[in-house]
Image (cartoon, rainbow, N blue to C red; front, side):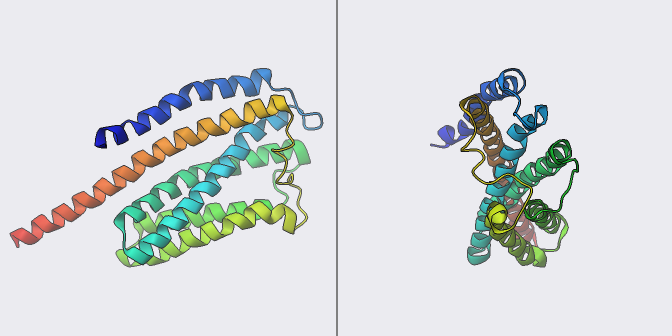
Amino acid sequence: MKRKSELVVPLLFAAAAPLVVYSVQRVFLHTPNERTMGTAFKIFFFHVPMGWLCMLMALISGIAAYVQLRRRSRTAGAVALAAAEIGFLGGLGVLLTGPIWGHATWGTPWTGDARQVTTALLWLVIAAYLLLRHFGQHASERLAAALAIFGAVNVPLIYYAVKLWKTTHPTTGVVAKLPPEMWATFWPGLAALLLVSFGLFAIRARQLILAGELDEAYVRLEDSRA
């Protein structure tokens, strides 16, 4: 069973490799420009998947942090931290590609609408969580977990922001309305990103779990010598 579990990550990367190549060439060579936004719309195929990845990882991190608080689980703490690190990178990608798309489409990189603000808030919450987990004292773990849970609660707010407030962002149904040739580009790209991300997530979570076990073993060894 252990050998089978060790094959999961290589299989994820192996499945992602052809999808990455296929998706990139689809975006730049075979996907037509959008009628009103032109070439700038191609950022959509990177911006939206990274946004979804950031929100998904924030949810995983928040749920794992809650389990960590309730059960004092080191494994849950490792999962929460690994998910937050992947979510941080996804959020950074969103915040870098969004202004480029916005400047080309709206004439300004930042309009301050509800989705932009809530997404930036989520990324800052994830960043604060990571700072506490990496550099905070042991007593700060509860505060860090609370931040992760708050980030997870913020995810539905990001999704429904375009419905609750008047925003410049497209509605949540824009993906469902894509023409077939754009669907054929979007979904493989999303799948490739998720496969790579979950492969990295599994590696990082395992690394953190092993690091925790090594720390515990070291403490037991030192206690036995005392």
